Image (cartoon, rainbow, N blue to C red; front, side, top):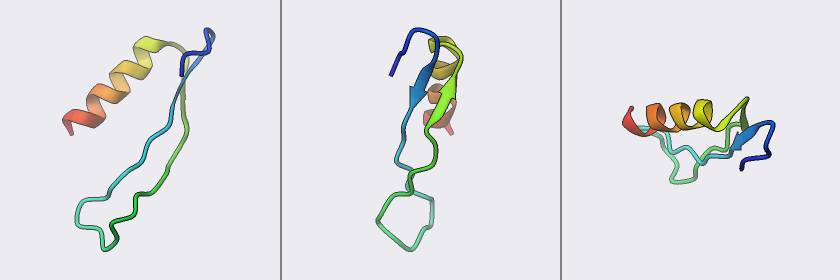
Length: 47
């Protein structure tokens, strides 16, 4: 979500090798701008 002065990302994380099919919900992650948020998402997806 872009709030103008910050950008917030909410995520569901499915741990590799986890015992549960249920995701964890870390965060939300708050960034100063959309560029930082995009870099975070790109790194998370490519990991």
